[in-house]
Length: 233
Image 1 (tube, rainbow, N blue to C red):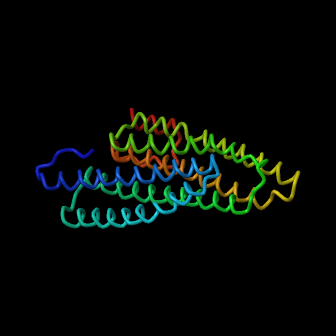
Image 2: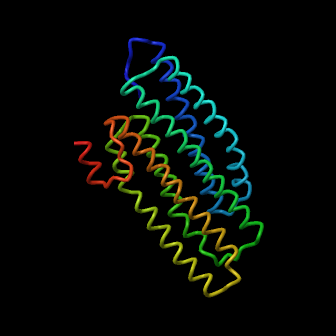
Image 3: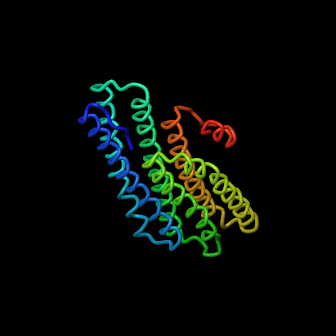
């Protein structure tokens, strides 16, 4: 990811950090994928494995934060190098939060299993949004590794798909709760689960925005797609 510097030690440090971020991203991606599988099959064992991974993800976040702070203090990087390190730090935070959302998904699945939620509830309809969110995270990590602004923009354009799936699912759940008040409690579990899925997509979007920040030095948060594409021209 980083460019070559006069100091080979600095290059080595940047390469090490970048590699470990990808490793952390792989763990979070595994969390999200397992949470999706747990949801699709109401598999308690899969859900527990997601929760167990959380400690490793949190540990990596702390270690990487320390490593980045140490590099900044010792190397006093400027311009693009500082931008890169700051963006990596923000990407790490987004990955950790995506892992938190995967853990929430797993806990909601366990709650639904424990409470014996009616099979008539539309849990399967969440699978599309969950697959979209997992796919967005995977693509964001790949684009981040290659600093690929073209795919970063594609990820930003696709973010609305997850939001639309979430809105559609909420309308379905409201219908279920109105027709049968007994489904209110398990429906709320599904609602929280759907919100966690949406937030995984949000963190993937944030990582995509960081790619543009690294490459162009432009903060494109809260910008329209047209404004972002103008920055990249």
